[in-house]
Length: 392
Image (tube, rainbow, N blue to C red; front, side, top):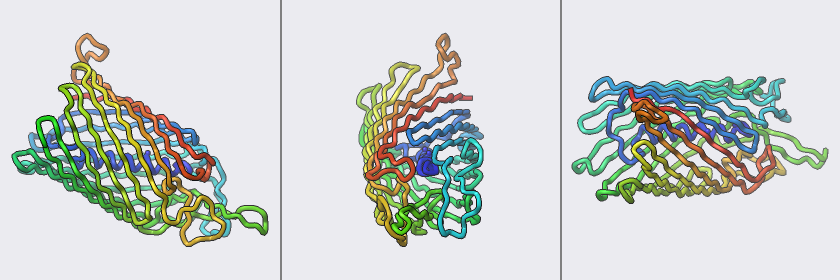
């Protein structure tokens, strides 16, 4: 690849992590055929925004090449989240599922602490490769079991590649301020076709289909409805449809402008059964500044419409009601700088098998109506990641 009015941000981070895994393990990085070598990678990822959300999520990944055709990997990730909204009281009127505990999230700081482990295998099959990975994630009010896999196969004398992938996830949601436990099941399928068009150009088209059924929320947000009889608000739990079909198609390219500079432009269109449509335009400009230092500048522009049932405010009970900014209309911008510093004898990093990797990013999200908790129209966030990659 990502929290409770803050929940939208946490869900986003989790989505980013899933997308990150899909990109890595389904060949969406244009072409991925080699069996992973022996490698240890450790990173510390951070996120800070003006909604009072702080996320720190360190991760470690180890891969071991057992033979020329087989490699195994293990991953551990934890995200530690603190959110201003989670210190608020979320009292709900007239809902029998509410408990006496009206505090969203954990009773202590940090508000969320999630642990995730994963084990994977990459296997060469004839001229292609097959990957499968299992993930288990747990926190105090949420658990998830995920299995994902992909197969990549070359054609036309390895000038074209087809990748097919699938992800199945079974989640359980048990908010701390409710008696119940609810399920959410996700089935995702994706395909990508990559073609070498020339000495310096690789192009790819990809598509995905995701079927999500069950409880679509996390359980802490509230909908406020003005009651003129008491000149005040009544508060209710949001109500979402219990199914959601998500689809996307995209195109991207990797263009070698010079021996040291590459450009990766792309476009993605998304639509779902909640009438949310979005477009993402992005470009990544990468340069090898020297034998030991490379960097890239990434820019993304995102536009989204709102869900059919979303309203800026509600004056009466509706069949479906939601306040999450992720179903509101708006747009976002992302600007990232990524770098890799490879070790060299006599330099800052003397181990030639070690790399220092990092990202410095800026994220802005504009909502067409104020956020339900902060009352703000614009979310601003800084993202900083730093880590090491050690070739063993």
